[in-house]
Length: 363
Image (cartoon, rainbow, N blue to C red; front, side, top):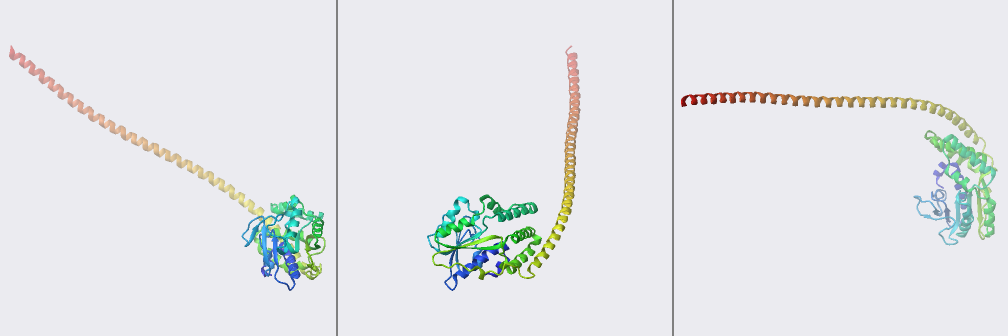
C-alpha cells in the first residue's frame, strides 16, 4: 500500500482500505489477483493494491491508464474474466431500472468474488445525507452533485442485492463500516476545511490522523456504508474481524478531534467577522470606484468640450484668415481697376483732344 494514501479524504480511504485488505486476505499465498474496478476511472484502488492487476471500466473518461469506457450493466468482458470484481460507492449512482442488470453483470464477469461497497437504503443513512447536503448548502453555498444523485435515484436496497447474489449461487457476507454519527460530523468538518484554502493544510493532517488512528475502530452500528462480499464456487468468505479492531476509539484518540473542533469553531467566528469587515471594505471601495468613474467621465466630458472649442477656434481662425486674404485680394483689385479706369479716361481725353484738333485743321 502506498503510504501517500493516508492523506486521502477519510470517506474515500475507508472504502478502499477495507476492500483492499479483504482482497489481500482472500488471495492469501496465491498469485496476484486480476481485479476489475467498475466505476473506477480514478484508479485509486491501484494505490492500495499495488501487487494486483487492476482493470478499470467507467462511463466517464479520465487520464487513468487502461481505462475502458463501458456501462456496468453491459460490461465489455467475457464471463469469468476476473478473480474479483469491485465497485466503490457506485451502485447508488446507477438508475434503478439498471441496478439488477449491473449486479448480474459484475457477477457474470467474476470467477471468484464480487465486492460492492457503498451506502444502502436506511432511514438514518438517508437522513444523514440530507443533513450533510443542508450543511453544504447553508454553510458553503453549494450542493453536492453525488448526494443529489443519491436522492434522485434512491439508495439501493441491501437485502435485494444480497438476495440476487445468493440466487446466483454465491455465498454472501455484508461488512459494516463508518459509524453514521461520526461519518456525518467528519464529512461536515472535512468539506468545510477543504472549502477554505487557509484550512486545507489542517485538513490533510486531519485526514491522516483519522486514517491512521480511527479507521480500524470506526465500525460501530449504525454505519454509513456496507461492503457486500459474494464468494463464488468454493472461494472462501473473508474474516472481517481479523482486519478491524474493536469498535471503540483508542483511548485519547478523540481528544485531538474535540480540540480541533474547538479551534474550528473559533476560526469560523473569526472568519465570519472578517467576512463582515471585508464586505464593508469592499462596499466602500466599490463606492469610491463609482465616484472615481463618475469623476473620470466628467473629466472626459470636459476634455471633449475643450477639444471641441479648440476645433471651433481653429475653424474661426482659418475663416478669419480667409476673409483677410479675400479682403486683401479685393482691395488690390479695386486699386487696379481705379488705376486702369484713370488710364482709360486719360486715353479718352487724348482721343477727344485729337479729334478736336483734327476738326480745327479741316476747316
